Length: 167
Image (cartoon, rainbow, N blue to C red):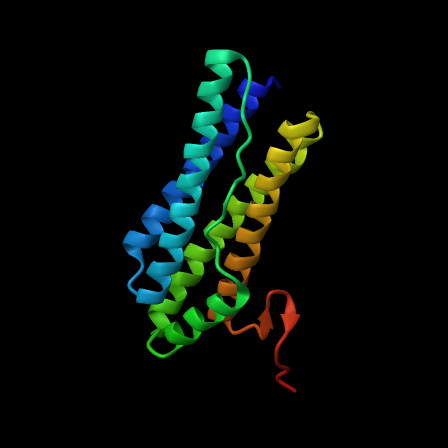
């Protein structure tokens, strides 16, 4: 896959995730859930904008610059505070809808991480570093979505660690 094709594919994937978060934000009734989906929506939009700028550079000059890629995903502590707020007023029905939204988000985030993991081995230098950074960020999204999902489902896990035992 050429670099141009890889960037176009990445833009498409980021757009699909962004669109999922736009819809989830619109459909979510819980304020904390809305904030979570808005944060991820905005992060994915930033990724698309970043990649579109790189694509334009590549198409215009045959080269790309590689400014640092930021993420807006908060720390585990910030996510935990958001979840504690949601717990206070999340109905059983809302919990089920949120669980479905998060499950869908997790699937798409995993597919995107798999894409970045696969293509970064095709590149070297700064191009590889760019795709590695996107993989790192998408893996952070997976962790955040999984943490939300675990919380909504009351699995007893928080970022993959057992928080409590029912026994």
